[in-house]
Image 1 (cartoon, rainbow over the protein chains, first blue to last red):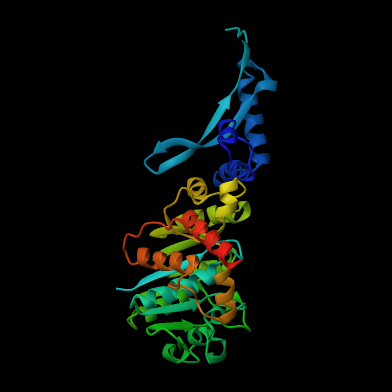
Image 2 (image 1 turned 180 degrees about the horizontal axis):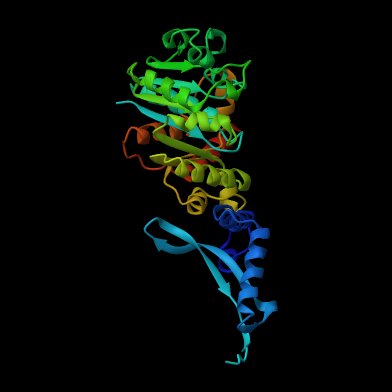
Length: 92
Length: 262
């Protein structure tokens, strides 16, 4: 690897493997398949839709390994980025 | 005080048996009394790597079923004093033994005065794995700098934690510095970062391993890079602090000697 490559963070096979593994292990460790992630997403949306209008296109939910430190060490955290289009007008 | 160490990996073919043979032989060379147990029932391998395949009379299952006494089944190593092998059975399967029986076997061996009891674990996470880790105080997880091996190692580390293994260390095997330098292979640091676990050794890919396995003679302690790396692992197991080999520098020297050979 030349300095230039490093500067531009060239996609080497080693970096590729590392990136793929990091993604893989997040779901492996959380014992969470893509199907379960989809279900979580759907259910969260369902609940939130009662109160707010959500931008479904830009919705992003993921489990992050470098998450919260607790008494039991570092545990994964669920990160949800849910853009709200507007609050629903609730009639009291 | 004896320490019981299981050598495991999840994935097959990463070097568990080679590691067991070399670490066991190395510890014996450091004047420790060592017994190696091949727990891969049905796929006997450790005896071949040790060059002891012609001396087997009784095996692990014979001991567990009470067909013989432990001492009758232990094979004394050809070269190194204080080193013994308890071979696996070739004609049985993993269900012939259960974790409770393994715990008892290990306890019996402890009372024979061994300093180290090394268990060579089969690949996979089923019965054989459960048997092998049952009596262990400590685990060495062997992996290669390669996606599938690391993924399996991560799973194994999780299972060891779930089984309350007291101490788990990582060995990165078959690393090729020339490829690491080009960015074609993950480095030891990459693997350690991904798995977030303490590292006890890094063994380079070395032709001398192939040769030593062919000859049935572990290469630990010889002048090869792998032989040195294995001896360093043994010293670290006994508690000695040993700096990691500069694999890159040696690679350069090797290249230099390669030029002279031409």
